[in-house]
Picture 1 (spheres, rainbow, N blue to C red):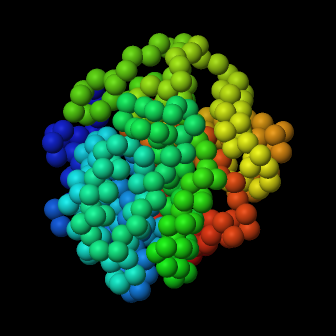
Picture 2: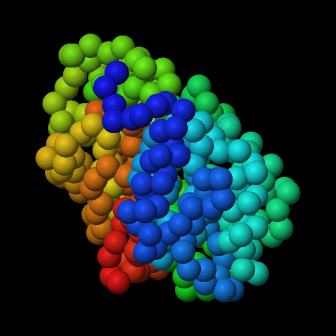
Picture 3: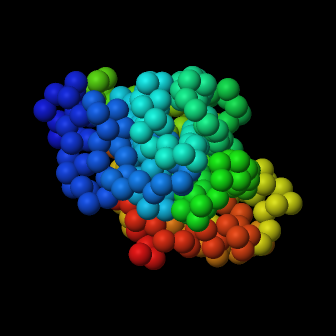
Length: 328
């Protein structure tokens, strides 16, 4: 294993210290490295709080700032944060309008965020489950929450900046989640620092189709195919799952897993866009880059979110975070 670390046990806290120092103009760390928070609070605004295991950066800490999250709770690599992290974040970030937890559908995340919500005041939750690859996985009951989580956080974050109330924001988050589908493919495994070796073995001429963001198995192991063939299968699965809703304007998000260069991600975007437009989907908004990663895994996912005028406007609204910045 070759990684830029000093020691496995201190890698997360050292990384968080570096992250906070690099973006000290917009965020800071909560006590004990339990959460990353916006530097300036907006009184009367619903606080958006998310989190999950580390290793998926810039999700979620990189999305803390104006127009998105108010706080993010990092667990150890691929391990859920603990309830006390979310409780402390909620207590510190709640300025009177309550908190909305945005949670990826993994059993550890769901359980710990639910416990924190039950022990906190005025908290509601949105659980994301956009992955169409499998109905159940090693860590989930039901579909996994993957790259579509970013889309929910951006659209709901913009609405929160407008001053919408907690119940309205939860309904919006649930609606955006229902309008979102994703699927990924891995070309290599990732290597968790504590394990020191790849999570799974995969041949040079193989790919894992429908892989999860922790390296958990997908639909099948298959022979490596060309980009068009990969995009065609993913897009067909997404459109098929959306059914009649897959018509009209949409956001197309091609996400890298950490080890895939931008050139390949844009090539995949080109393939996916052409295929989706043949299905009657109009790509009105786009995002390409490595935002919901799996450490050093080579691979990508495709996310499609169907938009209406209101959600498109919220996507376009100003955002200023470490990972996403526009309109400011």
